[in-house]
Length: 75
Image 1: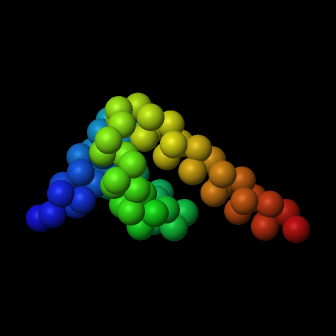
Image 2: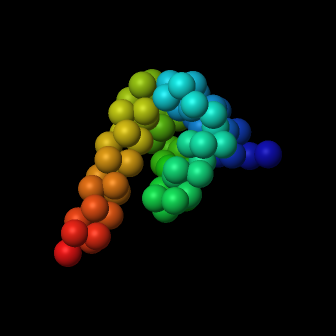
C-alpha cells in the first residue's frame, strides 16, 4: 500500500472520529458528493499540515458541494 493510500485511510478514520461517526458513513458521504477522489488527491497538502486544518477544509468542501446541489434543485 502506498503512502497516499495509507494517509487517506488515516485521514478518513480520524475525520470519522472527529465527526462522531464511522469511516464507512464518511466514505459514503464523500462518494455521494463526488469528493472522494478530490480528497485523496489532496495528499500533498493534507499530510503536511495538522489534521484539524484538513478537517476544516473537508468541512468547507462538503458545505460548498451541498450548497451547490441545493441551488441546482431549487432552479
